[in-house]
Image: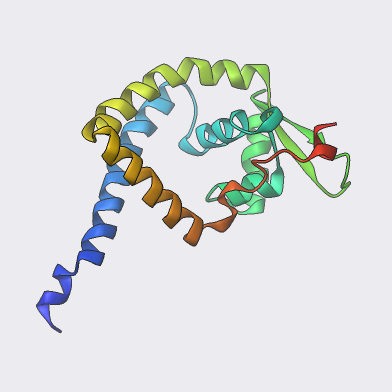
Length: 163
């Protein structure tokens, strides 16, 4: 095997992305644990809070996360028991339901976000100037949309679902 193949910038790019993600994830996980949440629970709360009416169809929530539909069901069951989210029937499709963040879930996010934003600023965004950050965000969105086209599923409110 040609040793120079390991100098390929494609391997370097993916390796750096994985290393950066692992480093940030470790810092985030420690902070979430202080607030009694797992990283996936934080992701679910954040995705719901950033969605129209603080809700997503369960299938859209699965598409936006790294979880399967059964994995989302288990996480939502646990978070519902903890009072952080609730289920709501979908008025336009009886087979579907929404996960909705509760007041308690929003309160928990309010407690976590200041520290989370400090970690993001310290270890990520402050490492880049504004033009670099804008370019990185554009590039990451392009890659995300190519490899995970369902990542924004349900982020646009449907009129019949808002009712």
